[in-house]
Image (tube, rainbow over all chains, first blue to last red; front, side):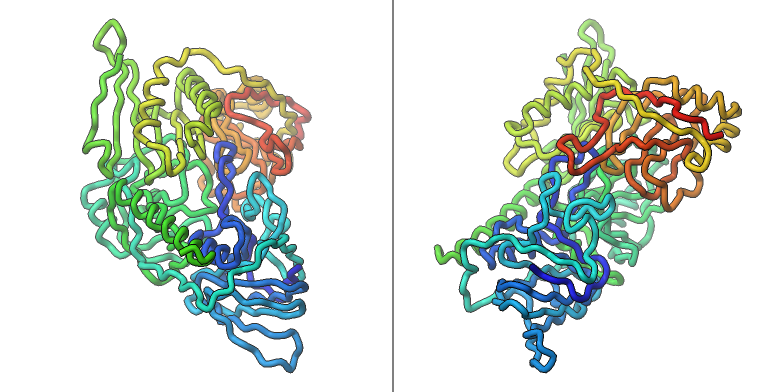
Length: 319
Length: 253
């Protein structure tokens, strides 16, 4: 069991997401950075879909009441490890390395080295909350899944799943991917409804990340995008990655907690292989969109999956 | 008999826009035009209703429900991850291995073969307390429609609505069939919090809010009926194609 001794807002239990229920209005939830999550789970010998903790704001202080191996991925959160005794010296741990903890030890994630970028805490066996509608992810808007359907609070107790194979004993760590701030995207259903100038602006302009961004969507600031004429659309299914343009002309990249149906024009969709970046784009930085074809998108996705396969093979010593 | 015309660039292009025109068999007249666009690399959006329409015609939506049932029955063999009907449209999200061109052709070939008949949905009755503290907008809504509260309640509760689609929140059913006399635009300032169980109207639709959330619809009543239970094997009370009637429990006038 892991005891939450101290906790900032927005830390939640997530796995790779909830799929197959969008027709009932149930969103995807899940980690915003599936690459970092799978890196961590591979290092631990976990199922790729094992649940982890996602952090946006620190601090997070955890006390381990059983022996356990931990991996941090995503952004560096200035993390220290202690034996739990007040006099003991603190040791710093960096992302991407498997750390064996004895019962009674504590880790403290202070604050993100890049405020607004996210970190993940994975444990051997995974966070063992009940599976609801096929997933352990927390649906924060509706309040189910995860731990009691909400963000973590001080005093919470997190169950750890049973663990069978020992984590890989490796002398090296995994370097977290650094976001390029370029989101490759394919034109969306309403691409042709925008003015030529707006389309050009969409691809050429640096888009500032708004403070109002959340797990629901990345809100962007820049010169507004205009339609050729007002467009009234019937409600239709939307997916994470879709770039919606509400009447104010400022795009929103829908993310994991976005609702399932929307009625705003969609100028583009960010390709799957680049969606993990949404977890690490802090306010006041900017992003660009780059147009790509279906073939490029599919290739990028294949490459990402091959990377994880290779990582798995090298960890199990098969390569 | 179809005539296919590719609009814009080629289907394989990033634009991914495709138009299918279904012609009447006897004449040159166009019976329907379906637009298909790609959404990212793994999803297709089929638009069965002309974009200018305020809401889809019921027969089109009924055909859409049938298509949905048909696709549901082969969800795994087709490699479909999400099958999401909307208002006169359908979103399909497929697994990485599914060929979108094959999926698109399958749907476009099957669409004209679907019979123009209703689906066997259920009829559910939802008891409602109209007005009062839990229906704060009833009075203003009735006034805006130029009818009495009693008349408003009677018109709202005598209609059999259909679940066109679900979305917005888990278990939130868009109910079509609202009496035209009750049509109102959304509130100019949405509420930051609408309580769960609120019965509301907006445009040509009515709905029940399953969970507390922000919302811009006119709240005219309240139900104790639980609309969504994630722990249940059937988490949503209402499903696409169901019929719904609101039963007057009390008029808290």
